[in-house]
Image 1 (spheres, rainbow, N blue to C red):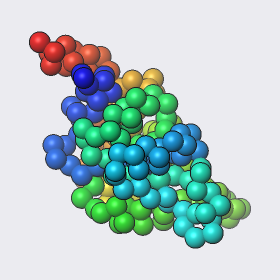
Image 2 (cartoon, rainbow, N blue to C red):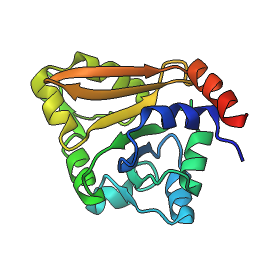
Image 3 (cartoon, rainbow, N blue to C red):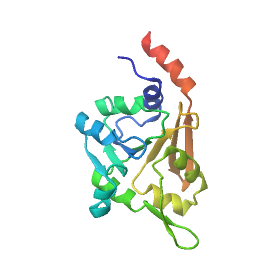
Amino acid sequence: MSASPAEVVFDRAVSPGAPLFALVDVARESSAPHQARQAGVACESLFAGEMGELLKDVAPHVIEFPLRSRFSEWWFQQWGNSIGVLIETPASLADVRRHFRTLMTVRDDQHRKYFFRFYDPRVLRVFLPSCTADELERFFGPIVVFHCEDEDGAGLLSFSRSSGRLSVKRTPAAAAAGQEKRRIR
């Protein structure tokens, strides 16, 4: 089976051998935890306790993301539907979950608390470029790179930090089409 265009784009952008996780918006794609279990990969809700039980069917989940797995095949079939983001990090699943739990809520000027949907590519693409160096440091924590679909849902945006500033790499889908043709020959 040949790789999908999204897989080809991702293969070109990800660091070789980098540990990967998916941060999935289960409210947008409810079958993600089931797909992870079927593929035999670890999957944890970002919510815990009573709140976790109450919101288990819509809570964001962090899922191990082994390349060339049944889960990654499923993930790339969803590409373009804004179901979540992929991350590169040397941290463990428990550490990634712990870090993301610290980012789940934000407060407005009147100190009202809101859930922050940073795991939605449409939010992440707008939020990260607006951050200060200190905000980037806190937001990235142990994360090396955030990967998400671009605005048209075909290409890939990769966000990392360099010298305290945000670095954005765009890998267009057109580049993947050319790469796919070379792989087939």
